[in-house]
Amino acid sequence: MARKKNRMSQEVNAGSMADIAFLLLIFFLVTTTIASDKGITTILPPKQDPNVPPPDIKKNERNIFKILINSNDQLLVEDDFRDNSEGLDQEVKEFVLNFGNPDQENMDLFNSLPPSLKGEAGRSPESSDHPNEAVVSIKTNRGTSYELYLEVLDLVKKAYFEIYAERVGLTADEYRALSSRSAAEKELMERGKENIPMAISIAEPDKTGE
Amino acid sequence: MAKFKKKTKTEESIPTSALPDIIFMLLFFFMVTTVLREQELLVEQKLPQASQLQKLEKKSLISYLYVGKPKNPSMYGSEPRIQANDALITTNDILLWVNQEKDNLSEAERDQIYISLKADRDVKMGPIADIQLELREADARKILYASVGKTTAE
Image (cartoon, each protein chain N blue to C red):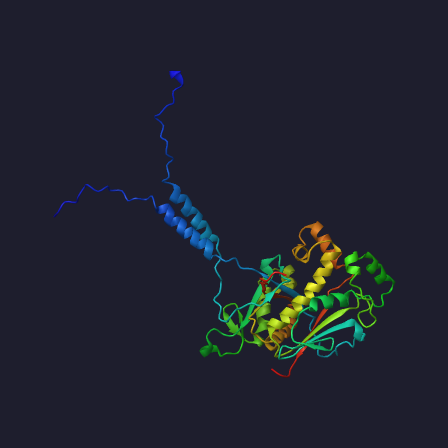
């Protein structure tokens, strides 16, 4: 049996161990994706009792901002045809803040708004009476793509959030980031929403054209 | 002056033999705290883009429904399907599933349950509407349309 050579050093060189560990560490840092729970929130209407007919709500045509989307992803906004959703947020904003025929209470609301929002008020008799009456209605078809539906819903929400944010002097991004955990932020949130309800009605889709 | 002569006997290099251990400790910390996706996705997921994103404050209240085309069309067909937990379900099962998810929450939190609808952008509104109808039936009315932030600047 040949004797082992003793000239080599017996110790394993561990100097590069740190480098290997660093490499692994960086690999994990890079590949880790933090799951995000972000999205657009809505609240569905309560379930309907089949024995009770749906309430017959009388609402003036002018107080409803109608958005229809068909199965070819074309839009019909307030009876106008268009094939993209550009500029919809501004139109919704003008619709909500129209103040066509406000009562005393809503006149006070109008007077409390910052000047930039007052400027949006078109006072048109064809559009909404006041924000408490205004409803944005989105009706889709079963063949409408989910992507476009969400895009439209996103724009409508954007219009409302911009109004809320402007009332409390924030940007829309800052307003949405407010959390109800701290009292001061909650108060800001409430003040933004006060008397301007986010009334988005999502109608059940048509059955045709799937 | 000879009195203040520096002692040269002290070793000048810092021992670095413990460095790998420290790095390994960091490595283990990251490996342990990283939460991998709890479930395998059986449907395609390309979330739509939106700008008005909101973050939910309590993660424990969220239950996830995945909607999209099955990844394995030979087994499940090419029509969009719903995935809850680990299995593909039909719209009729949603009621049961919601009740199971509600049972996992404490009594006080049950009606605050949020359903995160992770739907693929190619899904049509038909299946989405069916799901929403079932969720209304199950009285889980808070919905989060999961989406990713828009990259284009406004």
